[in-house]
Length: 292
Length: 347
Image (cartoon, rainbow over all chains, first blue to last red):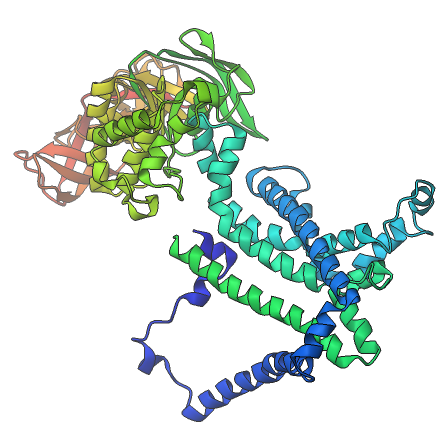
């Protein structure tokens, strides 16, 4: 029953073909106009930019393309992005599970506040998400003096980038799981415990398998966002080349230095990530539906 | 195993789900908790299981304290209203679950588990469904698998929450007969919750009638039906014809007229008269305290159902009369309660 809650069941189900004649009231022209407008829109805003990225990236051939990607600064940016994404995804996976579990299975004061707060990163500008950490951990920040005293670096270093990314991406996993877990209720867990299962056994044998597809789906979206995050990371990173530049920041720097080809070469990796995410998403949806 | 529930009280916020409940279930007995929704019957079942904890009172299994043990340790087989089968496991794995999660030392070998699950599948007559998933089963099949899963841990008590609630009428009848015969075979102490009186009266050895967090009556099915202890039980179980009356100086009055029946020791004041539809006689209208006009006659069985519009109090009642008694629509008839109960109104 993973479908409805994750919201993709209705998208896949084709409409019945029997009603074709009677249900249609629009004239042929109107129909083609509507279809034409949406296709044009898709082409201009989605396909064209994507194609441009790859065209620009390969504008001087495969050699310079690979050269741009193997540039030490680029390699460092790619590595940093992968590290940041790996840490943020794992943290948000854990946080999302715990939050969804507590919201779906228990009653406690402040529950509705927590549900609202989980959505906060969606509604707040990423720049602000970055700025709060500067205000907290920057040299002039709340904990700044203490951090300097103990020789710890958070802002303009990996911890700051991870913190900002975690904040921006934390709704993804929780958002996928909460409605599904709420729909499933607690009866299966109660059944497991009454049959003698421990808390851990119940979690790993009953709760987790019941939400696995939604969980993977959330992780996928979380990862895509973590790798692509720009605003929040830009504020806390400090743009130190070869050290605190992630891929999106690296792309911007190259672009500002008029190195368009190199800039688009790195951008093509992010575009590729988007495509892979899209395909993986479709595959996951198929699995989730076939298991019902 | 014997279950003792003593002085159990449970509140959810301002709502008192159970109010000082006492209950004893004998070893090997099949007991029904019967009541309308909100009567506390499911809460009582969940407290016995250990899925809920009382605010006050004690629960004893065979004389030892059960509340000090968690649901895991109580060895209780619980069958949930909506079955709660593990949706991602096959029928086989569902039944095997309780055997697989045992601590390593007590776990059976794979061969033994297979044998045991096979036996249980045979018991519920669904061997051919072993490899299916719960979503591929019908409601009745799911219910039986849920029961087999609960029995796999060899429970000391079997607790069933509305076991037939989600099934259609025909499957329901079949399953309850099957449950009754199953109980006769395995004789495990069992308690089930239901809001369906027919189900309770047919299946259980004893019926516990509950209302508003209290036990109204405990007794054999014929006891609660034929000798209801309270007005609630009389109204809730079986059909009742109810008339408001007043008792004054050991006499019963209906709308100011004397009704020549025994007040059954009820004190002066407002009370209600309860009669079963088949325990009231049709008599001549002249001189009868209760008179009315026949509105409708129907029914095909041994008895006929007659709807009578009483003149005082002005109310429509239904009675059963033998087929051979001539009753015509539009005729004025008198009614005389033959067997009845009088309960004083709560003050």
